[in-house]
Length: 321
Ligand SMILES: Nc1ncnc2c1ncn2[C@@H]1O[C@H](COP(=O)(O)OP(=O)(O)OP(=O)(O)O)[C@@H](O)[C@H]1O
Image 1 (cartoon, helix red, strand yellow):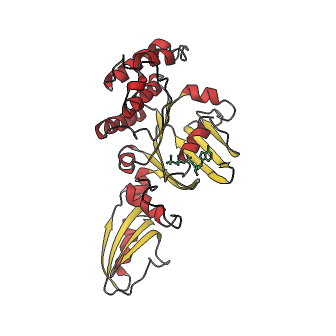
Image 2 (cartoon, protein in one colour; image 1 turned 90 degrees about the horizontal axis):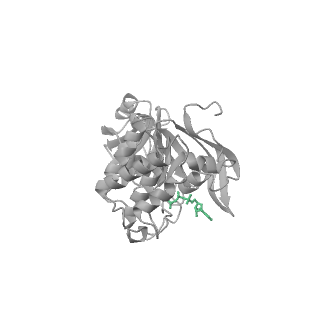
Image 3 (cartoon, rainbow, N blue to C red; image 1 turned 180 degrees about the horizontal axis):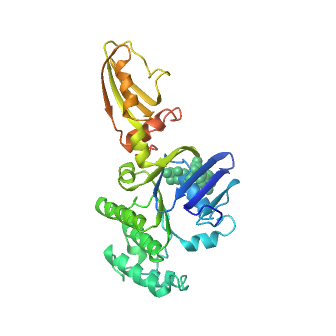
């Protein structure tokens, strides 16, 4: 360890480019132990690249990372042995059955801490819980069933840190819900879960922390409770169409995003507390004010709207967050 005893993952100023395509641009992030940490961002934001750097699967151009105190650029194998990893597209041996792949993977966990027997019994329990037929070949499984095998393999080593890249993308709604709730249970038992996702509603339900990436840069990273306590959606009605486009700089409110309709504005803002937002009520021309707590999706869209590239992506390439 290097003095970061309560930090499961630390990323310091990490940059990574593929030729002239910047994937990560000076990313700095800390994931506390015991967190369920949701990494959010649009397609191509750099989520998978972050995960690949953390697992030592690719090397950053600059900066450094530590995963459970280990440098993945130097000891990637050690990191991969200690971390449960569920990739976006699980790479599984197609010709093995569900049971066989468990036996195969157990062979990589002979150490007494985990033990092949412990691995196999946990894998068996998990696959049974998911209703996976032990004798069915991987190639005959649906996408969602493969995802469940991959997750069962990751959980079987009883890792203190789970890293999941879009873990629920192939799962139906019920299993997604169960799966994410099991992540909360893991965190309650002191484990750390780091997951990338487009499912904002789900992340909001389970995450203790969220980070927002945009074009390889960090937009925000904080405990979800804090984000909820400091972000407000103000629905402001004005007496006339001719009104202020944003809160004046004199107010202790930071505007994230504004949308306008005749005589009405919606301002997504950061503020110390609700009382700070109340000051908007006294601005000239304001008829009424409603202060709401935005959903994570509102916050995500608010932060992203101003950053959207021009021209916007066509519907065929846009990802539904
Ligand atoms: N092997 C590669 N070669 C070239 N460019 C790459 C490679 N991998 C990623 N990139 C680029 O790096 C950027 C970040 O990609 P990354 O896969 O990390 O994004 P992401 O946030 O995981 O996206 P998604 O949500 O679509 O999975 C993108 O512009 C992508 O095109």
